[in-house]
Length: 254
Image (cartoon, rainbow, N blue to C red):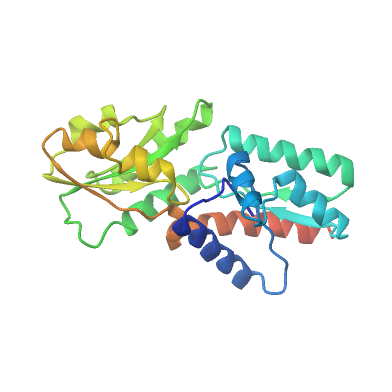
């Protein structure tokens, strides 16, 4: 399993919860984690906690004489970070002879976008009324795959016109969403695997440029929901489905 990483207790617990889902789905098969964030790996190392990069985790598995590895990143779009994971896997495969299959991120296909759209509307806050606006905030990217956020926004709008999907960088921006808000109370939800600085500061923070402050500057009440997508069954199931495909490819090559 590959994640950006998590420094908060809530983020770490979210990854532990997903780890439990994987172990339940694949009893008896070892599950290892790798983190793409160098900063978080260094922080974990200083705390004497396991802090493998993708390359280090795969080298370790090769030394332990594993031969087939399914690699599943908890990423949202097939952007730059996903490409870096694939490149790291390809490098170690060339060096070690490991048989590795990398699973897709959450929004890899039209079917994924449809499944994620239904996950968005199925996991709305219990206190939200049917006419209240909800905004999901994604990370975004300077990559062509950022268009997946726009695809998801369109799919979600087709199910519930009061639910909006945006990103901090590219695709649908908050500026595009603000004119469409109609309710006095607006809910904010992260379209991020775990709650970290982006959710705490860029989405729910008190800074004037946070999404919360910009919504409130319109005279609306804003209610952030600090829970990452890895903590919701509907989103988790998409990654688990992609892991199933990667694992099946491994089993078929044994």
